[in-house]
Image 1 (spheres, rainbow, N blue to C red):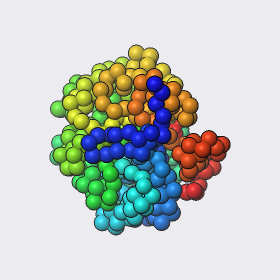
Image 2: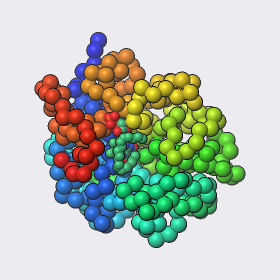
Image 3: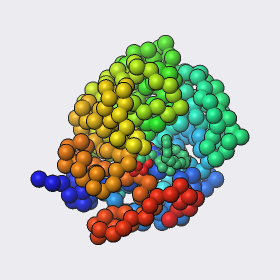
Image 4: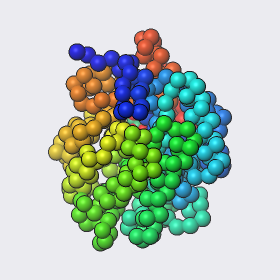
Length: 347
Ligand code: FNR
Ligand code: 8K6
């Protein structure tokens, strides 16, 4: 039997999607200077409401989570009100939307906030903020146990704020070299306390955040993105896979809405994952609903889902180029090709 991506999919007992096509989270750096979503963002998301689920651009949970200009937040009442306009418009058009909750950890920059840059360990990264090359990265402060408690609480608070803003749920950004991912890798985590050195300890922060968010808004509304195998601003360490093996086994006991791979090209095979692709590795270790992503089109996604490689597909760059991606697919119309110059404007 073939699966039609345009048929509905039940995520769980409380959330039903109109189809299996998700809009991937896409940072656009277009919020206003108070990190509040603008009317242009309301219109941008509303135009994409025929996706089965929109995942918002990564949205910072508190001021020191910021590493890029004009990324939206979910920690002031003005930001919550701004997002409310987005979620109302998406719902009015029949869609569903999750907020992606973000803390960039050591790639934060104090240019954007007052205070210190926090990370698992005091290990900096080379380079500088994209689009603001004069802002070179700083050596972060290793988070104290008190700092970690505060971070976990602030993820949960941001999840509550997301629900208050009308989001149908949240996706915790645990991928792409940001704070949660930094705890999961030996190159960024040299802690000697209960958050370092062993898979159980290194997965602890991710699981505390997941459990804190579940306690705040419920597992049905809680999803997670992870990028095992891929390295963003980090060097490889063969011990890292053990951390992900352990984390995924633990996640199987939480009833997450879904798990989402974080990768730009899912045809890449990783020696560190036993020569598997991201989705193959996640499918093997995770028993719940899996979202595939990374270089797929409608045909390759249909094949992958029919081959049971994953359950739902997230589409990123083609959704930037085609606000009407789903209706073009449904009507077999030609898609506009993505081009980086399209990042200059919200269409
Ligand atoms: C991204 N991606 C991304 N991922 C994420 O988890 N949070 C984010 O905010 C962003 N932002 C972002 C911005 C831009 C401009 C691009 C191109 C990508 C990654 C994205 O969600 C997705 O994984 C990749 O784009 C791969 O999917 P496609 O584009 O091949 O369908
Ligand atoms: C992951 C979030 C990054 C946010 C950066 C701001 C937007 C710039 C996007 C650049 C386009 C990326 C093109 C894809 C290649 C990625 C290789 C890792």
